[in-house]
Image 1 (cartoon, each protein chain N blue to C red):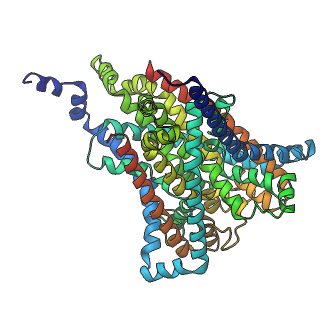
Image 2 (image 1 turned 60 degrees about the horizontal axis):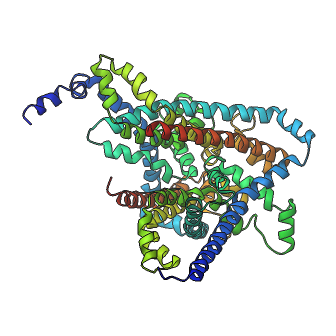
Length: 285
Length: 282
């Protein structure tokens, strides 16, 4: 032990730490300026503006009927997105990891499309398919089903954009899962249903919850996919981000900042919770 | 084992029914949600025929929109790649007070709606904003001009390179870097010949994600640019205007072209991800 310490101190890394202090502080400065200047300060600006006029001003803005409608609708849609993703994301992950079938690779590749396709293009795609001008949309409309300019279209857009959020993390956990536990459960006489609920699901739960929460946070803020599809009718299809956009284009910056601050704080809380969940799930790394 | 063969067969049959049902539901969901809209835009965009195709892509307004999108994306990618690698290095190799805070800031853009990004940039540079005295008062136009469009796109793309490169740096450790330095390589040489070479596929992966995001950004850019024809109208903003102005056919075509570019980028991303994992395993 006695000889180990000086050896460590003379290692190149430690020498660099002492000798090249200037360069090191320079790099730290660049990183801090980059993240602080580009992200933290502008965000602080919005929050300061949003909360700057005091709580009565905030309450006035947040209780305006248009704001209440937009926020309630957005929370509903985000909730539905999160739940649907939790179910279908888990199903997709399970099917891709556990089964061999024709189309498996196709499924796995197509599921990454939402990562690359611009969100606005997602909206355009849905409009092209379900809009009144298309055969499908025309047929649906003839049967009294509105997709575009109605809540179903908005939900479809959000589901498209967030499809990989639950599926990918669950897939990773499933790949690592020790199959011996499942086999033990079967050997002890448990059926497939019980084994899934008692053995597999508990292992997947952190990944499912984290993915669902991230879908929720993303759905709260989504603009590009929603703006064309939703039609932006107050109370029916005007979501909070589109509402913020409308306020901004009318130069009502103060109100826009209040609603934006609310959305940001909510998403931020969710992202922090998700982070905690995931680090706990990974054994505290 | 005295389990009757009939029961085993029965069990296997039931399992294959469950499998068939689950696979069926999964495929239906993905086809309905992802593939059908893709088919929808292919059909709608290509149906009007060659004349619309020609008039759309020879329209100077459309060409300018593409040019602007490429410009914004290129600047964004260079900035986020250079500063992203530096930041990832600092976050993984350096220990100093405030490191955890910086690390937390990296993920903030994921929690911010693009509309909020646009709004905060307007608030910062417009009249009464914190940076008004620096720019607007001296006649330097940031909002409704290229600089703000680049700024918001950078904000949104910051996490991609950092979050792709940092885990790889962590995983690699410092053994190779120390070896290079022991052999007399300068810190810069070590960085370019060892560190950067080891993370090159992760960097390419992050750059791919950044590019895809930068090409497609609409909410933030819409607010800060004002979407002025032939001046601050990017490809996505053109699509938005085209649909509002009843130029749907052109809008669909441009949207289809962006989707096609994204698919190419996605293929690249998959290759880079694969290369990086392969290199790390070996």
